[in-house]
Length: 422
Length: 146
Image (cartoon, rainbow over all chains, first blue to last red; front, side, top):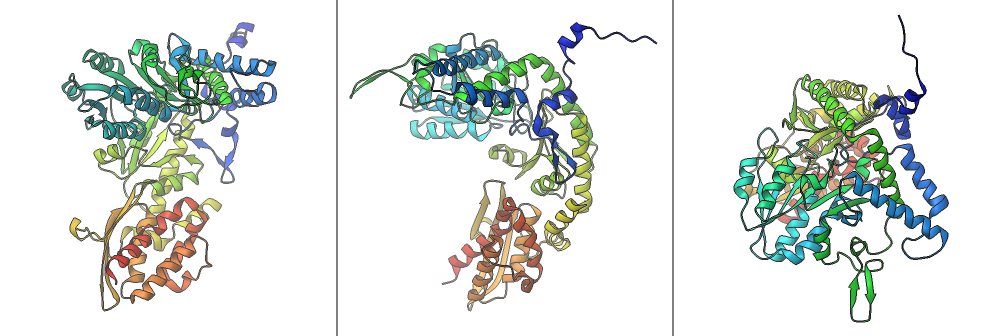
């Protein structure tokens, strides 16, 4: 038997996409939980863990570069400004924005959507206009529009969700009219895992004269994103769900839209000239970044998107799909379990219920076996109502999860069932 | 081993019994609901009605959905409060909530099944589950007892 010798090239290429090896880059995953239990972190749709390079980037920024951006002329300010601006370029490349001016740093998806509702919506939505949403939206893509609609006398219309968890595409097409000024939709449901055909939806909505906003909180971490190819007007996402620190995210918007929009918040950084009575605004995207931004967060996000891009978003998606299929197969074999979301195109957010055990009790019991899952309404109360449940349990996978995590969950659910005698 | 012992403390047999066979639970008509409590962090809901006559809590009924802790606690609450004079009922409610919040040392042992909920105090996120029905009955009594 012969073995192929390992060459220098192989070493440079590294082991390829290998989640079992990748785990070592996430220090938090190495710890034991409740004494001696291996940690199976399956709450990635809520937030992901951070790899060593991102953690180190934060330390390095504060140890060597910390300063305010775009103001002072000293060396540290130059370093901080350069890193902050470089991160914006990295994020723009990561989502195919075409130009860095289209990327506004925010606190995350919620702030990005609120920014659009406030700065675009207040200017362009009028009485009688329709804002088209879907039944599977997270509260962050419902509430800002409710507030806007109430203020403007606009109307909210919701595209229904079919029983398998996919969007009712026919109903969507029927809902389009010249009244629809905005279609806001999630790219991937945080409850059902459904991946919506955003490109097709955006094409139709824009042809009908609507602007299109996509909530990319669950998609940007898990699949290649090209906002220009998708043909969307706005794309919102969070850093912390894709290996970056909390408190940083971004809004992509077509540049001409950003130019037309009024500012979101007023203050430093977002102005050009200021007199006692008047002011003019800074160029985009700075017009939307009032105050000292989350510089270290932005730097961390830049490192995170490099980390992900180096692994390959296509590889991450492939891994997600494989592990999602494995998880659904294993969970389905458990007696008394019901999985929500059977759309043909779905990602790794897997919601379920176990007959006779409330999701909170299940979550607490599997935690004792070292398994972290989410329980509750998932910030999607209208969808919970549609599904006819008050709460669900959710396991969600990411690039560092392995089959052993899923097996540990299945084992822990079995123990919970024994405990509750169901 | 230790984790099982923890869980045994949190989910005692008596809690699981109340969860599976809740006392005084019955589906309410919308028009008889006195109090509708909702826990927005977890989606648990309880709707409650009560009858007070001659200064005594004669009956409590409730419906809703929630975890074992919240449903068992509602069941135990109803058992503990029904038949008590209003003043005494208020005292029991106040004592229970204070014990759960850690403001008062436990004398739940005197209160039968409710003693089994003591373990909840070690899980801050679950204390609201245990107290939801108690807040509901407190509001219900305030509404109907003059």
